[in-house]
Image (cartoon, rainbow, N blue to C red; front, side):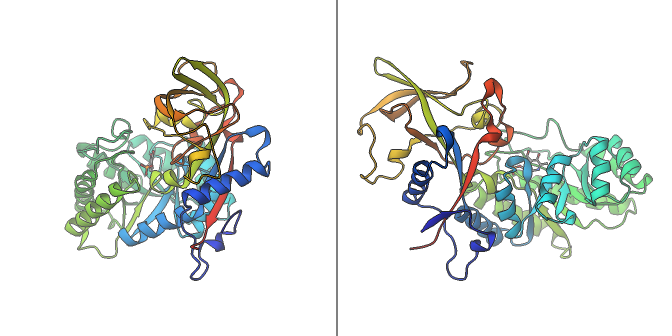
Length: 411
Ligand code: PLP
């Protein structure tokens, strides 16, 4: 079966645990949304697969049982998604006042939030103090002064720059993280300000990150723990291994690297609290985007289609996240014959977004069967850094795109 809007309790229902949607179930669900006209004027929509989220949480718990995830809200702040993650035990990494407000508005308590932005506006620090978000990151002396002034009760994590950054699609090193020679001065600055540095954080970079980067980063974190001890600071208790996880085989190798580095460097500290800030790992595969073809042009063999989402909307991931997107016509999403589209012959195809900018081109040299205006084109794995960073350029408004929650039980 499948359906919309279950309560979070449906996630764990005795033996009837939800499972990821099959292609048949996803197609049926999308068709039901379309035929029930839950979509006004053929607007694009997302499907959030509850079973996929449950499966990802299970994978996390079995591969990294001692690491508490703090989901990075920036990756996809969809409220129903945050609620499911919360119900399944995840905590949250917020980058701004607004993200803290989303999380608190879901009834999640402030001690389940890390304010993991090393450089915060003073107004946001004041807000964190007011609502009791008492853990944050820093990598500059000025941040120490701001926190001392506005939120002296906040505990700090020193964000370090891993020396081998993971060659990720989106590296963090050029912007964030203390260099090795900055560690001691930054610890002393916090000590002088009478702030508690409770641990260390890092981020190896996001998207296709090399898992080996966790090894060097965790070794470097251990050196910071030792430096703090040498300075006579109170014993550090938190290690934050950041994000950089991608579901699939990268996650398996990342988990092996993280576990072995923890064993090598932190085995002597069994009481250590280890946390992480995964974004992409939980969000990417959980969301599928359905768009409509709103225009068509034929030039010889070439087929050109315009769809109602694009590079200024959900597919901004092509630019900012250096992502590659894939499309399948809804009619051929599952290979059942009861839903048909233009035959099996495919054509070289270009897919444009809706804005009047030629840059707004989603797919080039792509093979698709013949499609018509009003057909639906489906993009899988669209949960990470997509809608969250979309704009309303040309009046196409990403935040208006609705998310429908789907779930399936084993048959
Ligand atoms: N934590 C911080 C501080 C980040 O800046 C990011 C991404 O930008 C994340 C976590 C999430 O990273 P990922 O999606 O690679 O897990």
